[in-house]
Length: 488
Image 1 (tube, rainbow, N blue to C red):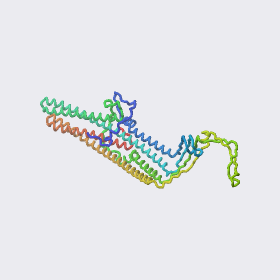
Image 2 (cartoon, one colour; image 1 turned 90 degrees about the vertical axis):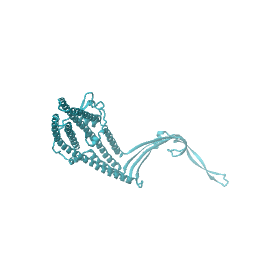
Image 3 (cartoon, rainbow, N blue to C red; image 1 turned 30 degrees about the vertical axis):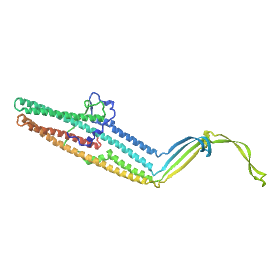
Image 4 (cartoon, rainbow, N blue to C red; image 1 turned 180 degrees about the vertical axis):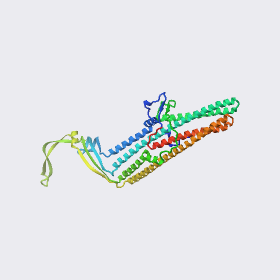
């Protein structure tokens, strides 16, 4: 049996898992009938790949938020506490001491970027474009889910109609067998005619089983897409709409009109354009590395040391200092008396030290790139390659969309023509089959000639069913690319 040749039929297994089914639609032992719209809505709501794409959107939103926050000043606090035993430089008095000391400091420092080649601003713009592009990635996944559901739904309908045709064919064969048995008992025809019809019945029953198996397989795929853990082909079915036969009217649009509509709205095309603009911002960010950067910095800090002391001042005393002698015999020394104040050390409280030792700093940092191993130049070249790659990806996406639409349009037109031809052929083969049946019953032809007429009829019935559903599928596919909702 021929299958749809679309790439979506080849990727039916991509859409498998979904979240727990809602209580209102949870399947029970009673059969639940699903319409196409219900299947699409439920799959889109619960598909795991679509949820995964949603996480990527959330991540891109956080990246955008962070790039905006990177333009704000940064403020950080610091602190330390240490113990020293022996010689060390007192951080408060800036004196060498030899004792056991507890010391510490606390501070707050901050900085703000004043200019860095507009890299921060261009990063915000690039991340905004990436956020919009990832949202379109999610839309593309949703479109794929929708088309996969429609494909499986159409395959179920196709095989149901094939099953119906096979059952009708079996009933005709059984009716023919009854007449043949009567003719055989009357001696009009040989027994071989009866045996061959019995074999044909077995073949018809096999075709019915094959069609039933195909229906169950596609229903299982739909159940897996909808993530219905309690459902199975026995209690799951789809709504069978009344699908009209294709007529001979010309399709009211052409492939170029569909492409013109799709190229302005399909997410894969719009996304490619956003990625080009994002790559252009990457070049601007890389070129910003050639520019100097200026930042404003400042800090407030204080310190403490247990080795630091305050002094109490007491009585004034005279301190004698020898400066020389009055005679050569050095018998009469000369002294200078200088006054001094007695100093008595006392404790220097912790919070008093923190208050007295506060220091403040503010400054401007300038960084001028002179030579950095050609890093900036190479980053610019890599960004330009990224832009060329984004442009090529955009052309590829447009070509693929144009080819897909053109192929679907051609297939729809051909399916319409095949249906018209198959309908005429079926009418002719039905008449030929009836004539062959009458001639067989009258002994005018043998079973070989009759089977030729029968096989021609079977093929014509299969061709007309295939052409009908191929046309409907391609037409709905084109309507989807025009922005229309797929309905049957």
